[in-house]
Amino acid sequence: MTELTPEQLAEKRGKEAAYAEMAHLLAERIANVGNLPGDYHKGYTDALAWLHERGNTVKGRFHKLRTTWEHENRCESDVNRIVNHPAYQEIIKLGWDVVPYIIRENANSPGHWHTALNKITGQDPVPDEHAGDLAAIAQDWIAWADDDAGQPNGALKWRENE
Image (cartoon, rainbow, N blue to C red; front, side, top):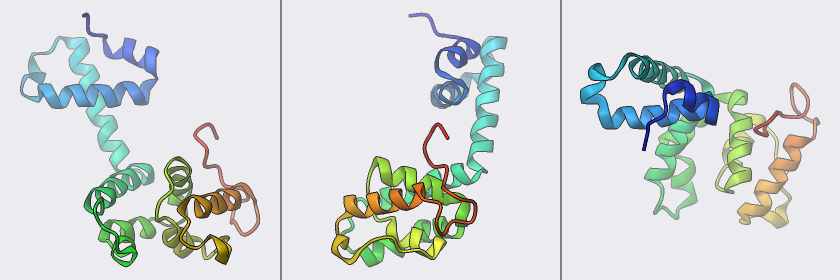
């Protein structure tokens, strides 16, 4: 099977997907990166730069912290411990900029995001009858995100294509 060049990957899958794939391949080949042909070497260098930049954005920080939080709480059932985990608390410290990513995450996989959203936004769109129902709570927050009431800049742009 012929390996695609970085440009071919970017054209086929989009720049972000291509760089993510190249970064994974790079991790496998890190010892031989200097021996790669010129086009590949530049592509991998660009992928590393992209990874570094991504890790320094709110989105990148959120994904890194979320991954840590989920991994370290995968067997935890105590909600207090889950929401007081250091990575979860760091997510809260990211403030309003992280809210679209939390909403998107909650839409894809409902979880214990109510506390973070409540602390960041000062809002609580969840009725008492939804307490404990993560899917219903996620839908309440999604409805809130789609409404412009109570948000500093109108309706939240949280969907991938917004």
